[in-house]
Image (cartoon, rainbow, N blue to C red; front, side, top):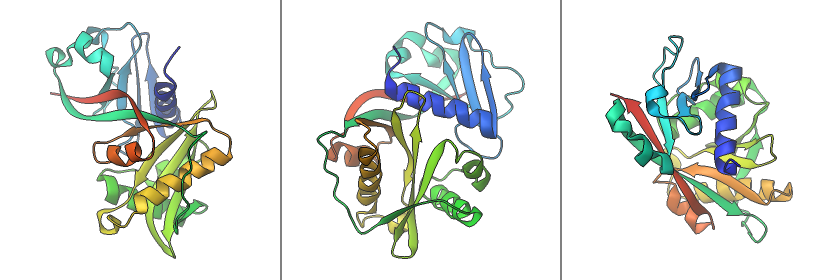
Amino acid sequence: MQDPNLYNVLSLWQEVGQLNGQYFESTNWAAAYSFDSQWPNRIWLKPDTDLENLQPPDELSVPLRLVLWQNEVAEQNPQNWGWSEVFSLTAMSVDLNDMKAPKGKLRLQKLNSAEDNKTWSQLFEEAFAYRYSPNLVANTDRLLDYYLAFDGDQPIGTIAIYRDSQGEAGLYSMGVPARFRRQGFAQEILSGALNILKEEGHPKVYLQASEMGKPLYLQNGFQSDFEMIHYQKD
């Protein structure tokens, strides 16, 4: 049985590719990308497949990041096939049954207009330094619940919630631009999203954390499950 964290993120990439770009799948690998954004733009191997079998079609004209899970890296030796490590994310999860997330002053509001989509996209790009277009937001709002975080009337951050076909929930795109950081906003956004999912009855929540974000999640009871290593072609 596939790890629920892995199932959640791979399902999301697939569905996003199908709605806002292209999704390719063979017996050995799968790939998804968006036409006008830099996410997901990933390619990954199917179980029991070797990197030597990775032969994407010519239609994949955009650069894709190869993603390997921690236990695959030693087996695949990606450097031998011309792939260089770019960064790593930590797949994490938390049990919501005993969690008490404090409520803060921030307000999480679902997007409900084209202007909201534009604001969300701008804040995301400022926080993460890559493109996530308003068009991508609009085309995938049936998959993800997108939220803006407000401090009073000022939008200061982003987050999105994805619920997969197995009923598992994942947090994505939690970002606060540098000009709004060091005020505890990331903690309040996280608490707000966890409270939403706890009220819905989800027993666990999944996400993939950067090195910068990982300490916050650990402080909130998340555990590290495995590493997701991202590579680019030399």
